[in-house]
Image (cartoon, rainbow, N blue to C red; front, side):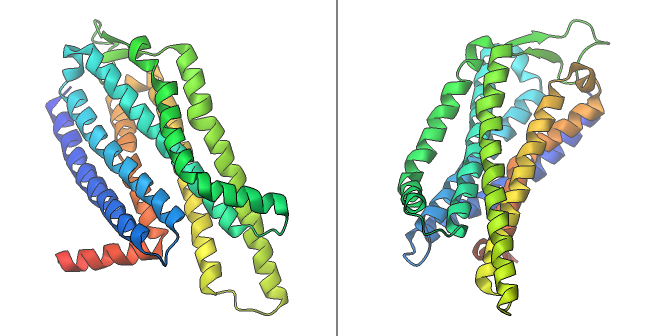
Length: 297
């Protein structure tokens, strides 16, 4: 890798690493404090705490991964690359499932129904949320475990056909199908369905308020709107990230150093982008971060 490209990537790494780690750490600390507040929703803050913690770990992992890749240290130890890839994909899958639980949580809080069956499901979901979070972690570990012994890393022998990273990665086809299906497609579809129910319920609520000549700028309605908007943006971010991962697996594309660097930057920005979405979609987090920034100034 050229010296100029190494310097550029290290500068980007420092900026995104410090920003993402700082904001995600704030999310973890603040939601842990909100979690202990009896006046707030423990389920919601517990889930935001887990999301912030996962993003922080993922951000640190990506920093180490970028350093190892920039200086071609993976070529010295192939097993290290397999373990880092397993850990990274596991955290990403956990993040996608956390997005699903958050969208479902917002959906059941927004959708009102007097049916006994729905009320039982709603109560069961709130009580089972900690188990769902732990279960999604164990599930992500299980579906990504084969990557440790199926991943092959080969040093490029032909310079003209060499990818920008300096090596080729060979993944098992069955793992790719299984991981794509259960690590992204299933939770993403669940997220889309819950977002659809939330939007339809929100629009119905707006129409009822219009017929009753109520104010549309109520705090509760604005809160529901922010929650749905945050879920839509997070869903689009997860889809874009998955699309970028698929592009990164295309050999003709990664042969171009510029294209490879752009893909690398997009992957590195994933946990940072999630942190910004969470902060600007939550008034408490937003005001707390602004207050902290003023104190630092």
